[in-house]
Image (cartoon, rainbow, N blue to C red; front, side, top):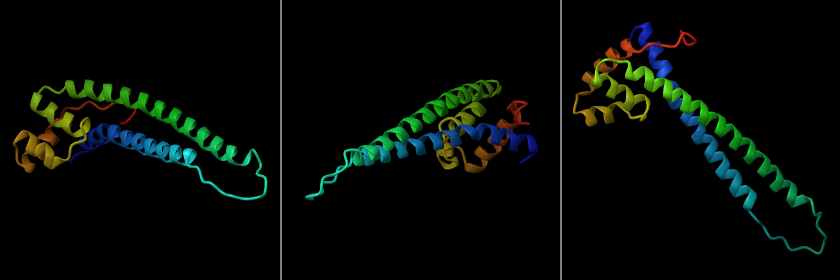
Amino acid sequence: MNRHQQEAKKYLSQAFGLNQRIESKLGQIEDLHDLATKATVTYSDMPKSPNRDGSKMEDAIIKIIDLENEINQDMMKLVELKKDIIRRIKAVESAELQTILELRYLSYMRWEEIAIELGYGIDNVFRLHRNALDEITIPETIQ
């Protein structure tokens, strides 16, 4: 794989990485929701501080809000990145090459799945992928 192909692949792969980070943060929010709503009963003669349980829940809620804000920012970045990737893929002349790029970098399919989907051998998919990467224009900020 030549330098241009590597840089094109790196650029196109950004959407997958950002999508993975969003999924990770969504999982963290789910864990924090579980933590915030978890209630345990303790029987004791001693009076409890009214702020003790509230601060745990308050901390969890603040973390949830912060993560939700991060996710919203990441989602806006992902949408903009995907729009740019789609524009660059659509600039590739061959519909066949566009399809391979879309399946790999927008649908996040594995190579084997792409080969099956298109009815091609895996080596043919790799060759077509290299050809497609040659036609991708890379933003100057990446180069």
